[in-house]
Length: 301
Image (cartoon, rainbow, N blue to C red; front, side):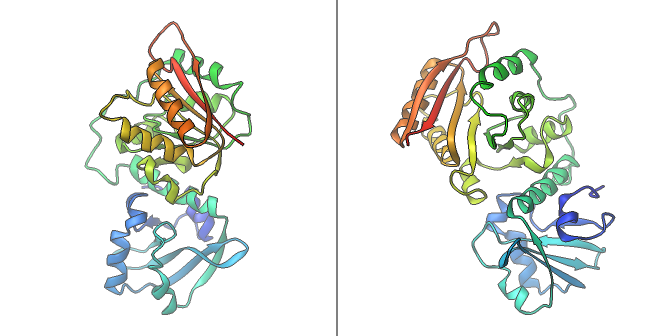
């Protein structure tokens, strides 16, 4: 597998021909650290060790890269940044290290890209059961672009939750944006990566309710979600938790599109209940299928 373009090479300041792997296989595992814990318990010996710290904050650790020689010569990156466990403290106490600095957002991009490339290359599965590219409906993208253009400034930092295979993400790209994208379905993200609908350094396989472990409150100008639902009485508590927790990451604006007016009104009321000023907007088109209504939330002050 070719990992020569991974941002982690740039961050670690190592040769692009050297292989770099994350110890964990998913963003969720970076919270639980199952593999990292096993590595630390094993007393694994490294030929070299690189400590990555936050730029201009030298004691604030992002991760540690170990140079291994067995069973192959690779770099293995461990990070306890998102677990709040301090798991790597003992490792650094017992090893001399070379220190490199990185901007925190850039480090996360490197981690996300490494996981995305491993996913795309089918490192985590036995083979892809999906032979065709994901669904692409130009009319839907056109309609979303028209709807979003007056709402989203061109320089906005945007998070798109529940992105699926990235069809709605194309409207954001047409507006000149580079959204962070998230979905819990790894197959959907993988198909989107293979079709180049999503960018590897911003495509996350993760439960949206865990996003606050990786991003601080109000990190983004806007949080969006396209065709959230279908919402009913049974699944609404789950959707409410997803939408409200994601909205906490928005500084100015939340846009959630739905199929029906009823769903949009339910979402808008939920946003109002936690302090947003929310309205319901119609967005009909000839297809009559996608993004027909939207709940638009703005900060109340």
